[in-house]
Amino acid sequence: MANAGKKVKILESHEHPGDLGQCSTMKILLVHGLGRTPMSMMGLSNYRDQSGYQIEFFGYTAFAESYEQIVTRLRDRFRLLSTQCPYEIVAHSLGGILTRSTQALSRSLPAILRY
Image (cartoon, rainbow, N blue to C red; front, side, top):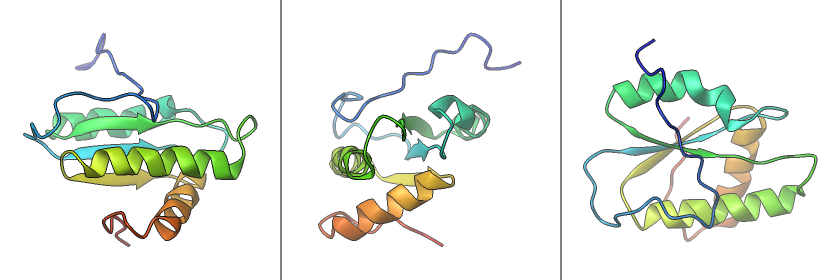
């Protein structure tokens, strides 16, 4: 396996990935679905990482956080990303609903959704 032993850092909304303004690649934020963890997106992460994208994850626990808390954290992450490099969001299941809710509540963010 090409990525065996590779370390993946799962950033929380308050963590900073480093080097603002130093963009050499597009960032992709992966948002998992209900009952899953960021690790469920590893296959896609490995594929996109090999394609030259910088991958980040957004994790949440639907049973321990309210919907509003998760959307607020995700909004904060979008705001942080929007001050850095260009970015895209790839979301699955509830992650997609959270992403759409965040975008609807955050009109100040750049448009990020593609259908």
